[in-house]
Length: 305
Figure 1 (cartoon, rainbow, N blue to C red):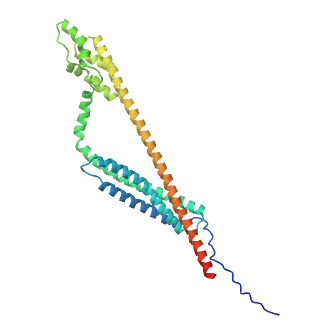
Figure 2 (tube, one colour; figure 1 turned 180 degrees about the vertical axis):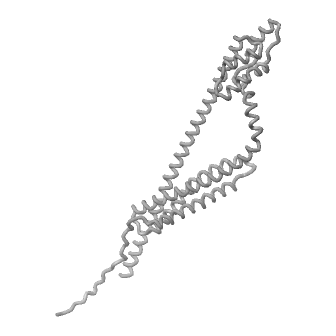
C-alpha cells in the first residue's frame, strides 16, 4: 500500500466569538457610574466657566451667560451618556447591534434615575437651607408683620383702591347737609365709619352690606337711604376688585401651567436625546469591535499566505 502526503494548507482566521446572551450588569453599572461622573464633571465645568464669564459692571452679560449655561446644561448629559454608552459597549463585548441597543437603553435608564436622585437631593438641601434662613428672619419680624396685617388690612382697602372717589360719594350728601346748615362729612369720617365693615370684608372674603349700612348710618349724618346707596357702591367696587384679583390669579396659574408644560417638553426632549446618545455610544463600540475583528482576521490570512 502506497502512502500519499497532502501538503495543502487551509488558512483559518480567528474564530468569531458568538454574541453575548443576556445582560452584562457589571458593564452596565460601570457605564452608569462613568456617565454620571462625566455629567457632573461637565456640568460643574460649564457652570464654572459661565459664572467666571459674568462681568460685574455689565448687567447685560448675565443674559448671554444664562443662555450659554442653559445650552451647555442640555449638551453635557448627552456627551456624558455617549461616553457611558461607549464604556458599556466596550466592557460587555461581544455584543450584536440589538444587544448594544438594549445595554445602552438600560444604561440610560439607570443614569437618568441616578441623576434625578442627585438633583432632588441637592434641591432638597438648598430648599431646606432657604427655609431655615427664612424662619429665622420671620421670627425676628413676626411682631411687626402681625401688626401690619391686623392693623393695615382695613386701611389698605379704601374707596380709592376700589375705584371710587370719596368726593363723588359724599358730594350729594354734603350738598344736602350744607342746605340744612350742618357740617359736611369728610373722607376720613367716611372711612372711619366704614373701616370695621371693610376689615370684616377682608377677613371673611365677602362684603357685608348690612354691616356697612349700619356703620355708616350710626357714625355719620347720612340718612338710611344715603348709607344704603354708599354701601351698595362700596360693595360693587369690592366685588369688582375681588374679581380682578381672581382673574389675575387665574391668569398667573395658567401661565405657570404653560411654563411647566414647556419645561416638561424640554425635559422629555433632553431625555430622548440622552437615550439616543447612550444607545449610539454602545453601537459605536459594537461597530468598532467588529472592525477590529475584521482587521485581525485579514492580518492572520496575510501571515498564513
